[in-house]
Image 1 (cartoon, helix red, strand yellow):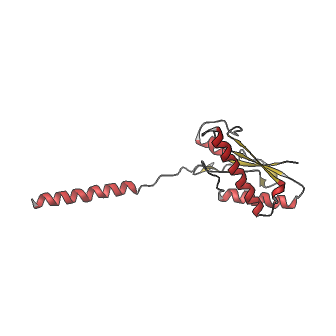
Image 2: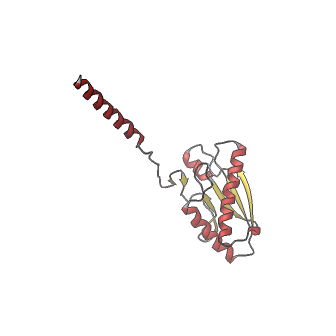
Image 3: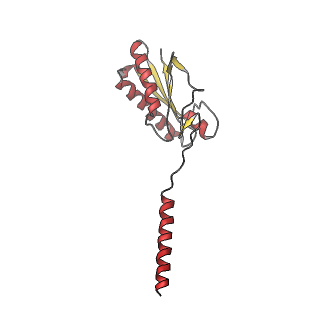
Amino acid sequence: MTLSKIFKNTLLVIMASLILTACATTKKVETTSQMQGDVYTGTDTVEYLASGVPDRVFFATNESILTTKSRDTLRKQATWLRKNPDINIVLEGHADERGTREYNLALGERRANAAKDYLMTYGVTGNRISVISYGKERPVDSGSNPLAWSKNRRSVTVKAN
């Protein structure tokens, strides 16, 4: 009887350890030369407003939160826009192909507005900035894979005049 209790207790400890170990595993995030997590970090689709001033920022899936790299890009844009007060811009919000048309239009608008708010924080007046969302209607990469999707989750700054 005592041996049976010891066996049961040992079995319980082993089972609890296995369960806790399974809960403690972490998901590996894929990092390639063009992606960090699920955010595009490459430059093959990037154009430039001016020398050294990229025209677009990229977002994570279903997010409108600016990444560190996006904030750096927008600071460069704000500096350039402050030096060129006669230039107005349009911020285009884009999404990848997944999700409904309505959801992606709203997400694209949130992304463009996030970029607008950040530019305004750095001294660009709001009346110089227009916002439009294309949702998933204007992909830069028509592929149907994680790299293509990451390229399409973006906000693009376009000169309006």
